[in-house]
Length: 333
Image (cartoon, rainbow, N blue to C red; front, top):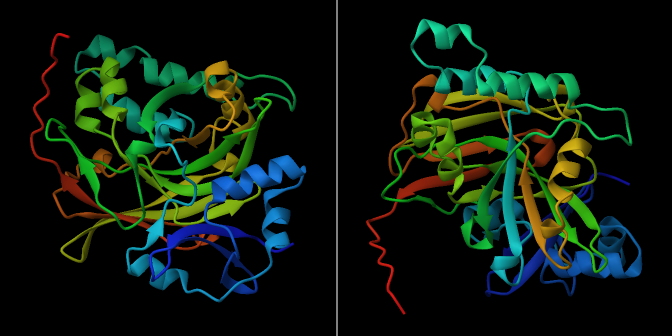
C-alpha cells in the first residue's frame, strides 16, 4: 500500500470533511467528517485506519494546497470535546539537543561550568538507556504538559502568545497522535509536523520555570502521516518577516537522530492510567535540537513560522500574534 496521509478541513460551503492524500492523488473521504470518528470505527471493526479509509471509497478530487491557502485547513486530528485532547511532550531526546538546552541554562561561574548540568545529566541518561532492547523499558525522559484541545491552533492560523510571555519561539518537532480505545489501549494513528511553541526566555530564568514556559498554544499538521515514523526525518525550519526569510536551519528527527526510541517515549507517557481514559486523544511531541532562540532570534508580531519536511507533505505555517492584557481576578464564592 502506498503512503497515506489524512487531512481535515472545511469545504468551500462550510462543511467539515476528511481528505485522503496518496499516490493516486487527493480526494475527499465520502461520508466522513472527522478522523476521530473514523479511528473509533476502525478500532471497533478490528481493522487499521488505512483499511477503514479504503473501505469508504474515493470521493471528489480536492486540492490540499488551495485548502491550506484559503485558511480552511484544520488540525488533522481533534476531539469533539477539546478538554479530552491532551498536548504533551518530551525534551532532551534528540542528538545535539542537550548542547542547545545546556547553553540556555549554564551559569556563569567557573564551578558551574565545570559541573555537569541537569540538562546534560538527563541527556546522558537518554544516551545510555533511551534505546532499550525491544520489549524492555528504558530510562524515562523529561516530560511536560502543554494543554488541551483549547490550545490547538490550526495550520496557517495565528499562534497567540500571552501578554505576560517573555518570548514567542518555535520548536520544530514530530508529533505522535493517539486515541484511547474502550479498554484503555492507546492506538497510534500516525505522525505529523508540529510547532511546539514555547517561551524560552522564561525557561532560561530558572530551569524550574520549564513548566510555565510550555503552557502555550501549539500547532500540528497539516497532514497526518499514517504508519511508523521514518527513521530519518530531515526538514527545514524557518522564520519569515515581511515576506523575507530572517532565519533558516535544518532540523532532524526520527530514531536515527534520537537518543530514545519512539516505543520508549510512548511507554513513559502511557504508563500513567490518567492518560489511558477511553475516547481521549493525545498529541505527544517528541522534541527537537533546533531552535531559532539558540541563534539569538527574537520573534516579532506577524513573523511566520514555517516547518517543512518532504515526507510529511504540505508545510506547517503559523504567524505569531501577541495577545493583549487579560486581567484575572479570583473571587470568593
